[in-house]
Image (cartoon, rainbow, N blue to C red):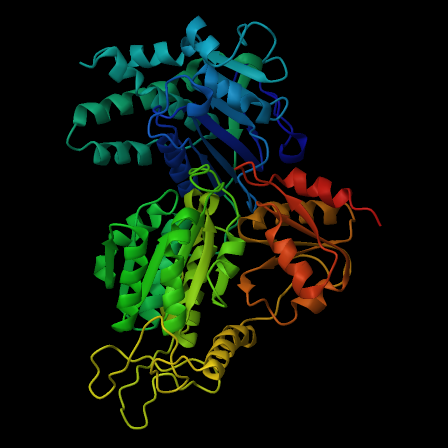
Length: 627
């Protein structure tokens, strides 16, 4: 079995026995039809890997169709996981192992596999018809297509049916378990435990125990095949030691789950009930799903009839004295724009979660992108400033959500939190924090009518008082029409509008004094190259910069959490570098903001393929910079 030298120890020679090769990290990709249970397979492998104690990062990648046509390349679903005994920052550039359950999965994913990597292919699915549908003119099992790889050809379909021979199921029903047979084989390859998956299957199919037992039989059969079959090269699988993680209680968490828990925690720290008004949209619906199950923590989750109703319900909740939160993806955020403007004018706290996806209009609903930055910062009529912050990873979503609660309630403003499809669906180990050690978020409602003026501002923050609707003696007007700078009465006075506009802008600009100065993630604070990122580019940038630094390259990594307003020292920090490279999954939005605000010659590295950056892409861009 061929393994990358950089991550492998020498293979122990042991005559007549299978020997596991020790590796520091491995990238595995499962791929098949969208109905083959690939995402379930990947999530179960992730759970088993997390329980062993490996660090990990995942990348679910699936089509927009609920059930795309069988055997088509555009219907391929994939799940990639990078796990190891060392710190893991990304889901990996190149799979060391590809499990392809049909020719289309092989066609779409083979070029991504590391040369010399392992390819497990279901030969039973490679019929002449399925090969033609996948776009193969010949048979890749026979024409040398797989020669650069270590191919393991197994009739997974046949083995699955044989394993379920005693079950009273149709052939079609038996074949639905081939993902479990494949999972059992991969469990054997990497020494994973089957019991967590067995328990999960019995709980999942408690009302149909025969289905649970069929899947368990397939899982065990795949594992047994690995133990007993003679594979090429005397392959005995891999051994991946647990990672040296900080002591604590861990769970695997997706970005959307972490956002939900962060919002709940933030509301608790502020001693507020939370009202979450949302409307389903890919890939943001998972936030709604997560929060809908947290009613015991004081969450009211409301699925509205449309995006406008959703945002307005959240605004109404804030007016009544709760924490109003809404969420969507790019197209839905566009529909919420007028509502966000209302919250800006009424000066009420509102948290808006934008889980970005690829393309304008419907675009590529299940693919990732960072193309809503302009929309978040500027995408409203008139001068309508809001605070914008961005999460860098699934676990970072927890802290970002708490920060959004702090800013929204302290400055009486909408705060837009930028996530994306990659962060939302990906998973990684999360060390569960001690909530008792988190800093409380002080929120004070105005109850004293003495000297009350609805829009009189706090001298420090520029925010008006928060008055819960119905508070005796504090009745006042609220709405989207311009108001007098103190009384809140409707005002068309030109000078008053100037002052109110300046006040709203100044309030948001002042947040820059209430956030940390920008730090350098890796490297020096002055030098030749600064790679500046935001959001989910964190992992690939961090790994690329680490590798380049190991080679002696003068390069630093700077990553923004606070997008708008930007940290006070950011301009001076960037001015200390000869080159500023900005990788982002859009056509150059942050790089334009940096050029505009700081007049620096920042260079963009732009990618809009619907896929995350690879480490190698950023490495190559840094190497290509010319002095």
